Image (cartoon, rainbow, N blue to C red; front, side, top):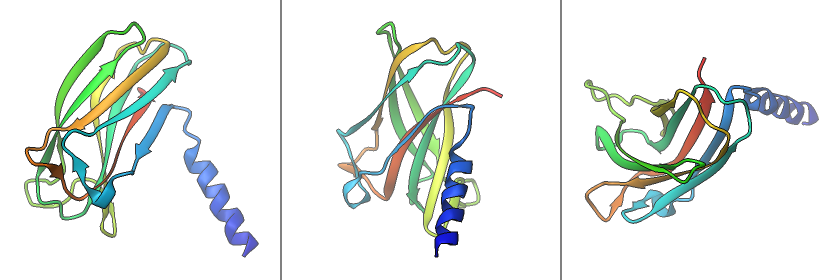
Length: 153
């Protein structure tokens, strides 16, 4: 029993040690797996590392066999200087053959899509707000949404 716990702990530590990641957060607090139409998910992070090229990726978790090929979202990025940028994006979930694009395990799929590349990510505090632009009262079968900020390789 103790050996299993130790192996799981070591695996978690090994997988979470990615020195290229500046920020990684995932919000899975969606009641009944529904993303309500006026619900913004906000992520705050601070870049304290050297200023270099980075990718901002959206992480969307959903139930496999999603009924829509893509999901319209709105992302607002506020930089340390207070300037905001609005990015309308479509996250593609299903390919042209009707198969899930994301990494799927069982009935859970995770899709990562780069939504902005920073040639230089300045030091300071950032705010990223993500909102569903689905044309109904809620977007169904959503397990979570998050962002990942990584140094470009």
